[in-house]
View (cartoon, rainbow, N blue to C red):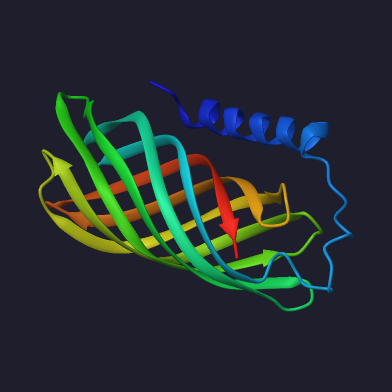
Length: 187
């Protein structure tokens, strides 16, 4: 079982190593035509660790994967956007011997800050959660998170993020904390 602190430390350490690596160095000021790299549509994929809890059941960690697509608009510093996502959190046995997971999809509003090749951001939105395994219901609720994306090339970014969703289903509350790293293709 990977705890939240360990997962977060792995993601932050990996991100810092990528940012410090000369392989990822680029001339940010040579983007041409004054266009912002933080404007326009994008698609992405991510992998990481899911820590799920359900009412009365101790949490356990497993892997997670996800896809997202959205649109960003750079307002001369602040970056706003809209993002659709899907997360796949596979079944895992949680104490006391309850096996469950979830499929989550929804929409977020994104607020970021153009800091050259680096964009820290926050997301807030809506999630539709479908339980899997012992959880057969579905519910909807809050989705949000924090992250940072680094533009590796003119249209390819890598990111690290934490997302959280919470929904009532099957007579209880399911909470997912996802710690992920991913890649995005900007158009």
